[in-house]
Image (cartoon, rainbow, N blue to C red; front, side, top):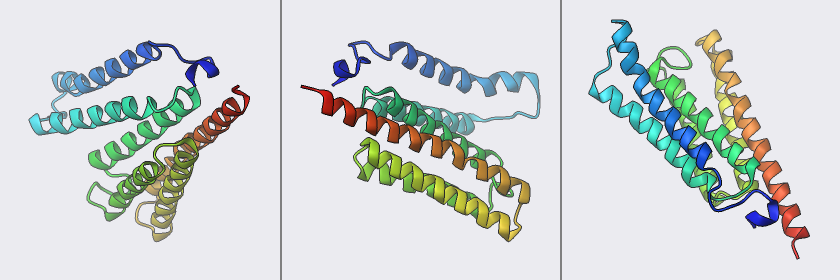
Amino acid sequence: MASNMGEGKAGRGNGVRVAIWGFAGSLFLLPLVAMQLTSEMAWDGFDFLVWGTMLLVACGTYELVSRMSPNRAYRLGVGAAIVTGFLVFWANGAVGMVGDEDNAYNLLFLGAIAVGALLALAALFKPRGMARALFATAALHAGIALYALVSGVDALGSTLALFFALPYLVSAALFQRAAKELEAAAVSAP
């Protein structure tokens, strides 16, 4: 199928994968460098363990799921979804998206990520199902942010959290595009 789409070859993506893992390694070391520059950054071994695990899970998930299709839109959709989920998880753990990190709304945002992941798994990571999963994730995320905004918990945090729904929508649109491209390639194949 990859050769039909003009995107596949044996070593495809090696440069991208090296760049992703290299960037993750740099991000892992960034707090260590910051600790040398300021006393306000005081991470211990547990902080580095959590940070490293987050980076490993994000990059490993991208490696696994992006290999399910040679389609560029599919891989971009996977990347957009993972980066957004990573940023939401990180923001919640660091300072909290709404209020402080102990605010219950922040757990709901993590729940939206979990629902999206379960829906993607239920769809067996097929493009149309992935699009639906990411639309659902975006809707849940936006709904939580809007509810927090209307509740008056943290107007600025709720408004900023609302914008995190946009990359989920971009990811869903990329999966829709991938589905159309794969269907067109299947129809035109002999």
